[in-house]
Amino acid sequence: MNPIRKKRLMVVLFLVFGVATAVGLALVALQQNINLFFSPTQIAQGEAPVGQRIRGGGLVVTGSVNRDSQSLLVRFDITDGAENVPVEYTGILPDLFREGQGIVAQGKIRDDGVFEAVEVLAKHDENYMPPEVQEAIDNAGHPKSTET
Image 1: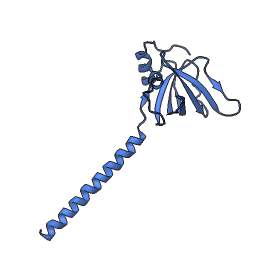
Image 2: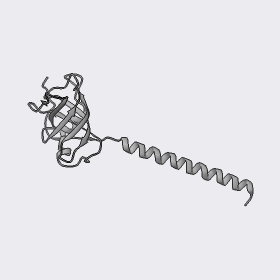
Image 3: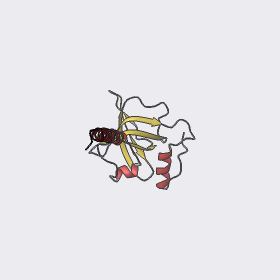
Image 4: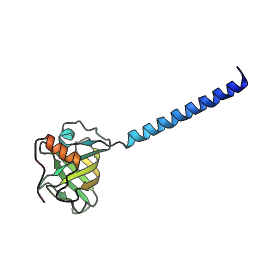
């Protein structure tokens, strides 16, 4: 083989290997950052992966909010009208968080079935419902919440 062709072949192989490595690393990074949305029914039925970061949302069940007096731990349930899922969150809740309102939380499902949230997002006004939450409620056969 000609030395010039050999050199070109090495450069091409190096470029192909470099691009393949970069694409592989990007795909691994993207896969780790994907957090899919699951409704309370999907979480309760075990469709949500345990220990993996996900988003879950629904309406906060009236009468379920329980605040720990010694810490920032808050326990509450979310529902889509068909199933309830217990949620634990340590931190300061958004000002618009209240019972009967739609929320979306990011976190993990523990082995005991409790959704351990690291972030809770509340709707921004009385007319807005997060699209994922509204779809889950509609699929469960319940109308949009009108409580304020």
